[in-house]
Length: 434
Image 1 (cartoon, rainbow, N blue to C red):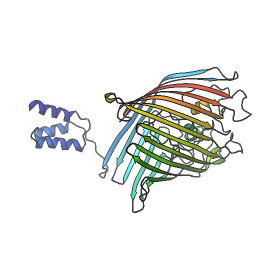
Image 2 (image 1 turned 120 degrees about the vertical axis):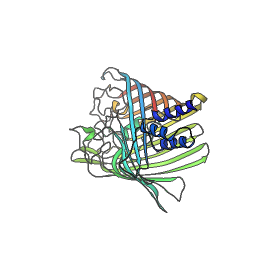
Image 3 (image 1 turned 180 degrees about the vertical axis):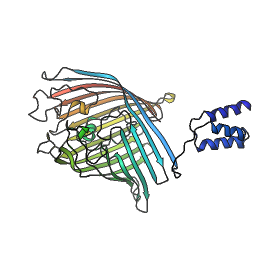
Image 4 (image 1 turned 180 degrees about the horizontal axis):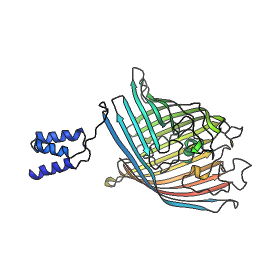
């Protein structure tokens, strides 16, 4: 009994943070006669109490993600006019995410999240989702209202958690459409905006859901008007809002078959920033499907947009298109966890708007003598192995190879030699979610 008592006291005293549950544990030990009240009080005094200035705080949740990655890439061009083959390799901390969630009641909550390894953004810099949310439920409504900075529903892959991707990095078409708007061709039509969001389910139809949002015109920024990429010489964003809408239907056909169909839509009257006083509209749509059949998971989407002043920022519109098909088959390897084999094919056609290699394939060096917007189309295929060591994504090791090809010139004015290039990319990533 003395040894047992000492063990309980040692465990209780070792806690650096003590919540209400710990007090309940100590009280239970006292009630069972394992420790005395004096001993319980002494153990409680050795801990650090965390309290809130708000007495209505119901729950405080801390979570996070750490990803460490090794990458190697080699890029080359088929044209003698290009620069020599370029390689890049090394270790990097891909993400350091910390998320804090405070629940004031069953209806009100607030989320603050940041990625300390994130630097490529406008005024948002290290910020991820940061918002206030209110649940609303009535006879006809069942949803949640968000006020703040978060992702819109555009880009199926973009709205998958970075910790739950089947591939190590997102696709070329996803990065081109929703990546931060730049002078190098990326549309910047998706991911995070400041605005008002409404996500809801239709009570009368099981599986039917919809989302609506009104946001600022520029992504990856927390102010109404900022310059593209945070560059003082970049074009300033427009002050008119973007409108977003999406609808989805999820159907469970059996215990092993689940399918979700969806359609995302966005419209920004001044979303394409050409100059401080010239802004064009962007209209985008994306049908998609996500599902699983037994141990096989898959998703696919098609992205299309009409971009005013889209072709090299002149008077002509561009209609870029992209698509993805991705699947993974997972095997149970018993005490070793699970093993998944993933494949993804991605295509992108910019319709004369153009792209730079390093803007759509991270950590790949440009091999063009005129690197900005020098290729019109791209395709890539990815094959990888995912080892789920603990849980679905709690501890995960990923190894992946991607073959990328870029070809075609978006404009006759661009160097004639910029016709095609390719890259081989290998990545290894270790992840822990907590």
